[in-house]
Length: 396
Ligand SMILES: Nc1nc2c(ncn2[C@@H]2O[C@H](COP(=O)(O)OP(=O)(O)OP(=O)(O)O)[C@@H](O)[C@H]2O)c(=O)[nH]1
Ligand SMILES: [Mg+2]
Image (cartoon, rainbow, N blue to C red; front, side, top):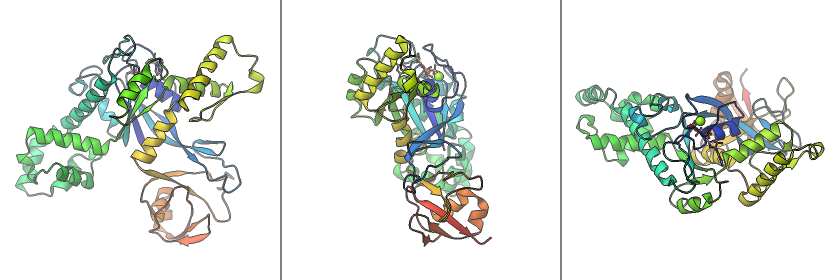
């Protein structure tokens, strides 16, 4: 799974990326700091099943803190987008194509209104963040349209002349945008388009681009820089109209770095942190003040918002579920790790899909599965539920 971070320059994409992945990336108030796309590992946070089994897991990937399991998902940081990016303005459009692979997008906006559309610093609350939301959607639509238009004449002629199945042909033509037959079919239907693409107008193509973009790249808006005084005013104003979560990438980054340097204990997504005992006297007054500010911020906002955004996009927007492989009498792998894995699967996945997700051989030789929690057998078509622990029994 890949989640892309998008938005105008200086809105805080790289700060969000660094806070979520702790990867080294450059952050600065100068617009266009990021020059190329970069991938890193972020995490969704789930309740680990280890507690239910009265044990402590040892994840192979990700980590587990206080029985909260952090399961890896790929995150991508990209350069800032400006108006006209789809026509090559700003950093151009080449990096937009690197978002082809993204399952969903997080749109980072500066809800404090202290950066303009080109990323320049301005008086706070002076730039209307709603403009950024509108322009980004438009740029993404134009990006899809550009790809659709590539080779469109030949494509539409062939489909019309040889009477090809439109949903199949469209899915094939736009597979780079992750358009499948179902998405193609639903989009054509919802736009009331006929099955003769040569007759579609320019407006039809634009509508199709928009429809496909919405279906293949669900978006959550991250209302960033909520820590800046006055930002809440903008947030309250816009939250009725748009689906957005308030966040402070900067506060999350400070917490994650302090935890990395073992100054504090912090479980990402929580509303509190703890200064490690022997550190209390060693902290400089600057650090103490910063931690005090963060403490107040968390008290007021309940969390930095970063984890909420990642979880919401994966579990609510993309509707993934999480399932653990395990054995009825043994939760360890061959290297002694307890409940080493946790897999993210699409809603509706079956026991057989799960077997294939672990290994092709497990799928090919699938006999049955066992629900480890109640030790009952389940068939290949069993629909998996969140927090299931499943043992796959094979022929060999
Ligand atoms: N107050 C506050 N400042 C933030 C926050 N997030 C980012 N910033 C600041 O905003 C500026 C831009 O941050 P970046 O993360 O580099 O922004 P970007 O969106 O990656 O910018 P480009 O790479 O130029 O597109 C930096 O000075 C950050 O310190 C936040 O949550 N609160
Ligand atoms: Mg950046």
